[in-house]
Length: 68
Image (cartoon, rainbow, N blue to C red; front, side):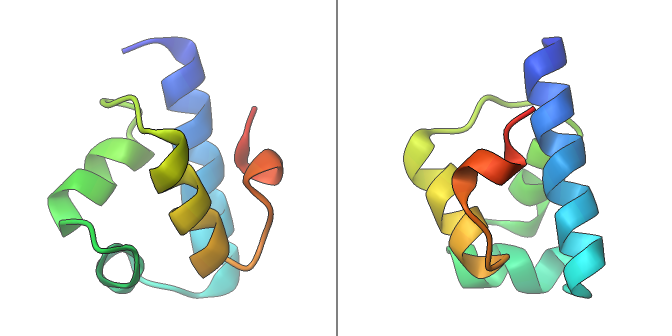
C-alpha cells in the first residue's frame, strides 16, 4: 500500500496505544471488524473519511491529528 496509508495507520496505532485502548475495543466501538482495524493500522487499506472520523471520535482527538 502507499506511504500515506501506512503513515495514517501508524498514527492511529500510536494514538490508540497512548489512549490505552485495545485494538479489539477500538474496532468494536467503531463498528469495524478487528481484523479490518489491524489492516488499517498496518496501512493495508485506504479508509473513508467517515471511518477516519469514527476512529478519531473514539480516540478523543480530531481527525486532522491522525493525518500524516
